[in-house]
Amino acid sequence: PRSFVLTGAVLLSCGALFSAFIPAPLTRTSAPASISNLPTTAMSAAALVAPTAAHAAGEGSVWIPALSAVGAGFAIGLAAIGSGVGQGIASGRCIDGISRQPEVADDLRGVLLLSLAFMESLTIYGLVIALVLLFANPLIK
Image 1: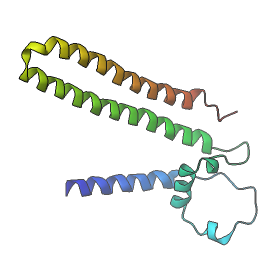
Image 2: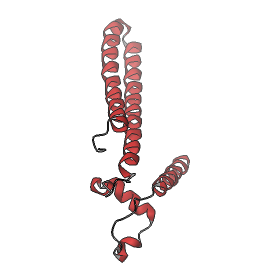
Image 3: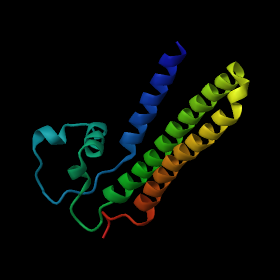
Image 4: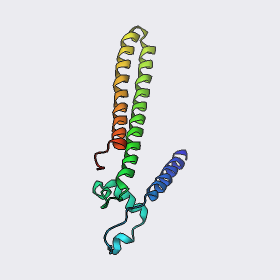
């Protein structure tokens, strides 16, 4: 029951996020009837999935900076979540190992600290990618 509620809340928030994007004005005057009948949510989702759809024509395009900000958020968020889960699992297994064999505590502690440093470096890589997307974006001229 709780997972259904959380899943529903995530789906509703994603729907609100996707409908918040406003597409750049098109240069064509006539659009096919099948494209004009699609809801804004589906068009925003298609723009997030297809990278070529993010390159809207014109100098006043807001798609690339907006999607770069979303990508930066996902980059640092997923890197932090993945690293946090991995560090938690590794630390828990290390504590289990130390509780079973206290005589190897020094060896396990050294290996744990080294592996935690490698996991944290992956989070820093996610931070670097997010900062590049926000401040030195190669897609924006």
